[in-house]
Amino acid sequence: MRKSLLFKTLLIAIMSLFILAACGSNVDGDNENNTEENTETNFPEKSITMIVPYAAGGTTDTTARALANVISDYLPNDISIAVENKEGGAGVVGMTELANSKPDGYTIALATSGPMTIAPHTQDTSYDLDSFDYIAQAVTTPNIVLVKDDSPWEDYEDFIEYVKENPGEVTYGTSGSGNSQHISMEALAGVEDLDMEHVPYEGGSPAITALLGGHIDVSVNQSVEALPQIESGELRALVNTGATASKGFEDVPLLEDKGVDVALDVWNGIVAPADLPEEVQEILVDAFEEALDDERVIDQFDKLGIEPAFEPPEKLKEIAEETYEVHGEVLKEAGITE
Image 1 (cartoon, rainbow, N blue to C red):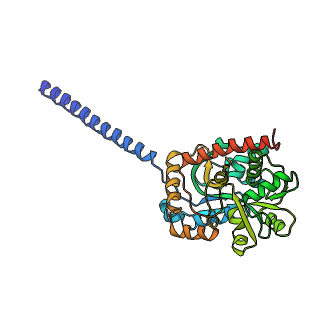
Image 2: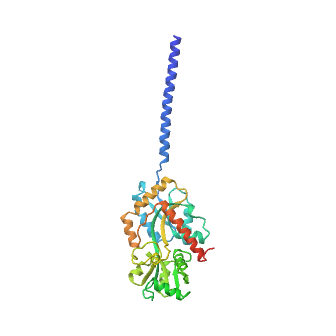
Image 3: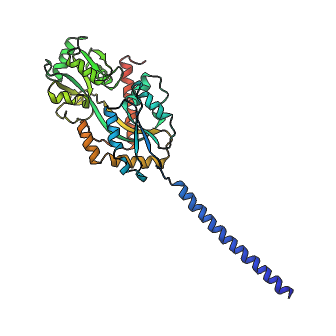
């Protein structure tokens, strides 16, 4: 009797151990499943803010709003993007705010090459290229060398010949000292051994107004800024200082076509604070790639005289690094920086 009772007790204990082991195995399995689920993200769960480091109404702002208008169709959970203008310091104010934001994907910016690759050379910025993670290039626009339609210079060759024969006489205007237009002309001057006087203005429109008023001989502007005056016949384009042709300027030669090794474009790209989670970055990259292929965005860009120019994160970062180096070299050679 005692042996029978002892045997039963031992049997129950062994069965209990098997049950506990099985339960433990299930718990471990559940934990593994939970861990896998925890590595996935529910991003985004709320509206995303896109900083535009310039005032409302400009090309960068319009580009950002065109993308924001369709992005909810391509982001999970139908989440929208709110554009927030943070102008000041030639774009530095907005980019500083982005660099100091939490890297969770809920604050991004449509940056331009100016505050990203020029300002760190000319200003004491609290950020550099490594302060950001890269999402996608959106558009690129070249700078165009412009003259009045009644200018005696019919083409690039006429212009260069006159400048060389009359050093220091020709004046050219840009939207500011040390910006991409200024750098393009300094690079050209260095290659062609030209002596011209730079006249900086507070924006592209004032430079064009000065050209039309006869206050300067030449103006250098982003192609989109000059398109209305080109179409009206008030201005004539001599040469494109960028790497690619631009809508409305297809017949304008590139500097490279003239044997001049200068090709500097203004690029716009979506960036985020550094240390963005990889899965969040992937979601944003996919969404913007699709948005840039959306017919509504293409039509809006077409009205601005620009075209989508998507490039993935690694390519945008490479472009930023290359332009940073080139801009630094030109600024130093021009005596703008030490």
